[in-house]
Image 1 (cartoon, rainbow, N blue to C red):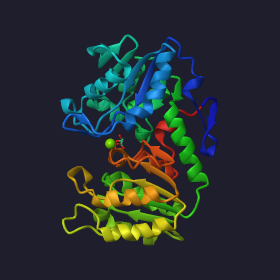
Image 2: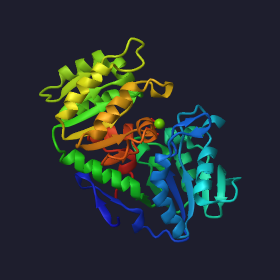
Image 3: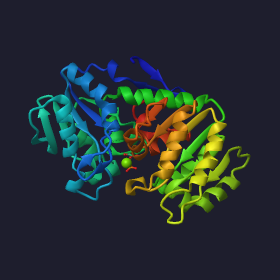
Length: 355
Ligand code: 3PG
Ligand code: MG
């Protein structure tokens, strides 16, 4: 996967394989935002997606400064420490021990002389504020920047956006694959195309739902989103001039913690008539065991021979544990990022890589 890669709207990003990384210090923005429960990583798909890029750099004898965020911590909070990620990489890279150290005054976990993992970037306010000072601090650790975190590329944060403006910047292997497949789907999808949206993060998703109406033929809304947006989504939908998508908002169970199986049946009928299905976000509070509807829906989509794409940390974590992830054409590491990409918006993190 080498060469300058042409994106939608004729912009270009360079693949890491075009960079002269040998013996250089390379800052790699990875996706560490995995679901963690009782101190254990529940699903490591996002970490696995970055491995080919990390291994490539290590084979080239680069010094890898790997960094990312977990969750939305409010300042320094050990619960969100990337130590858990360092331990995961320790196993993968067979490092003998993890040493706590500093890289340009940033706390880091050293696995060997060529591999460092920075502490959760969101412990510093400068990350989300995209402050110039923090971007420069991150940039001072390396000579080259690589973005291998599609899932956070919709955030104009220091490690995604600011640093890419300072250092020569490249895209990691998985990010390129994501952007290629999603661009193709956006440009020329097999229709009818059905969008299924659930989960939380209303503030990110609600504005995107209305944009989906222009791209999708059917929009199915479930989860927490269904409860909070039933009226809003329907009102928004009605307002879209010339909208062609059909909107179906699920009904919630009495305890409001899942959607009804009847709603899943209605969704099934729509899926039956689709050629492409794109899914983001669980239907109920799966983390608290309210996973019946999500599981039903996953089984229906698994069996159906459609072009299928799934995204979002929680959804892929759940499906991967249920062994229902193998039949997808793309498992996107992006939740909000995937939705925003498919709504036609340019993601700041990808824009920052353009030449
Ligand atoms: C995600 O989980 O979608 C990404 O890690 C981005 O997280 P955020 O919504 O907290 O910025
Ligand atoms: Mg997340």
